[in-house]
Length: 432
Ligand SMILES: [Zn+2]
Image 1 (cartoon, helix red, strand yellow):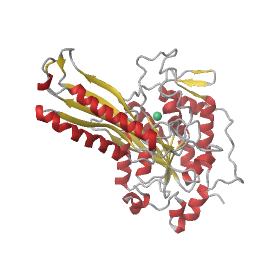
Image 2 (cartoon, rainbow, N blue to C red):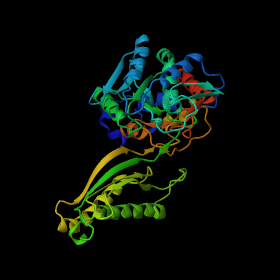
Image 3 (cartoon, rainbow, N blue to C red):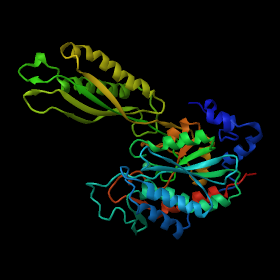
């Protein structure tokens, strides 16, 4: 979706970080915000993490917010902290009201704001070999350990720790906190938050998603599209195969098709250099089917995914699979009319494509005192914000190598850099 076509921007946007599209009266402000000025270098973090911020982050880490659980304890805590500052929160909930997103504006009344975005949920630790208690939030040897410390309670705790600074900032823009649920299971929660902003006519200027990038602004990531395919055949004694439809074998035809597509991406897709794998990928992750050696299986099920380059057309990928299934199906139905394929979408996380030249990227680069930008291999909410017309960048403390791992940690050095980033954001003015 192009930004200028988005109704949210048409109706409500008063300023924008897309400098070449900014309304003329506010162009100067946007340009100033975007400027990476050698005359105003920001200190490259060195001060240690403040005890207040570290304690807030530890409090968040100690809350169990594994995706399948409620995150309401954390949301309530943040809401209460903001209430102490006199800041109200917008809450959007899931259908059964067990999980919530929080959106708050620090600097109400300013023309538009910069979102600091993070997810509150974490992946589980079942079966992982931890040497520390996953929710202990232990600080040891310059690292804060715990599930979610890196991905991504370090960032959201740090943003919250500086809420008062944002509130009192003389910056010509507000700072928004956007905390979501169910990111780890397919970026489900943030969709409700973005829809709520649109309904409320809130048009943020830009979004910084604080996923772990080592505090380097990341300008692109691949999309993640995951599907389940259920295959219904007709069972029979395995000596009577002509009367049956073998669900596993029909599933295998589609799986081979997926493999062919993957090889096609590798052979001929235009490369996007900078990614570890600079072309789109397809992969089957799970397969189930069959009950006995001598029974032609009636049912089979498999799950697969595409990880598409931001420059690739992902919708054509799934369409190609569906079209192939359509061609396989008639032969199945000839023997058993009830047989066939059915598909279910498990998650759709759009790819993200920003640019090193985007104003929000340059702002993040300046705030992080980073000398370069990067690309990341993992999916984030940035594509969803960008597709909603909000220029975005991914930049947060810690390394993705520690995310989802046993003994997950974020270094205090990274948290200190993140704190310097927050302080620099609160100090940003209309730069002359
Ligand atoms: Zn994450």
